[in-house]
Length: 369
Image (cartoon, rainbow, N blue to C red; front, side):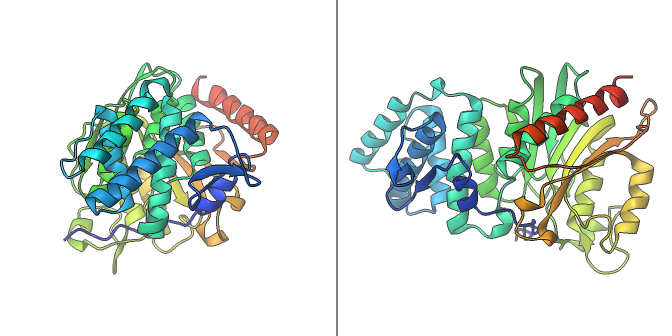
């Protein structure tokens, strides 16, 4: 029996996400993109999403499966340029092949593929998956990609791990943001459907991600990496026997999964490697926080805490921040000043540009001197 997936904080739902896309939204009932009731010319992302959506709905009927399962199936078909499911009728197989052929996937950029696939997954999650399966918001994924790129300026190649990979949306956003830098990447998740979606997502973007369908708090077959990125699963970890292997196990009762994920991530990070976590704002004020603080003093150096805009979240209790750690090692120095910032709304371009300039200056001063 699989362990329950730990609860994640709730972000603004898909409706708000779609509405924020330049005032355009996908009308699921009418099956088209619209703005103020008028059908608009499709962008590449919208074109891709429409094909994902229409072909997934057809496969959902043919295979009698969930929409999310059908998204994985149609993504696999699109990657291979064929219909792999023998159960599909000859007529519908021809329809699918025609849509796949006319799309010409090679014309699209990785970020366009990632965003379109993300929209299809979000639609499926809204209908069939509990809220704690919601993926990291796109703006946050892109911001984390920026942070990883800037903190690893001196690296020619990277090994990257996401121990709560989900559909690989965050991981592939980071890989796309490396701008030509070579990267070997790894992801782990206990949910077999999410791992299948991650596999398809990575393949469509031509990222050779090595994926593990397992409890990520069990031993991983991964060599130490340069970078960890993780939207921490928040909640209690139900396997007390396995939790006993960790320094951050609870002294009484159940252990926090998000604490154990931090410790596990540090185990699989090289000395001097960086870890970028999306954390609940209450992380350092919750029960067991003292134990976490003591552990981090021994194992890592806090480089920064960047609070995400509260407007992104349904309530203050669900609010999150980006925690940046560096694993201790012989040549690792503490920064003169920890990077502590409250981020403006991502939609405020001028404020974000000013903030990113400050972050760039901090990195130049602290990491390149």
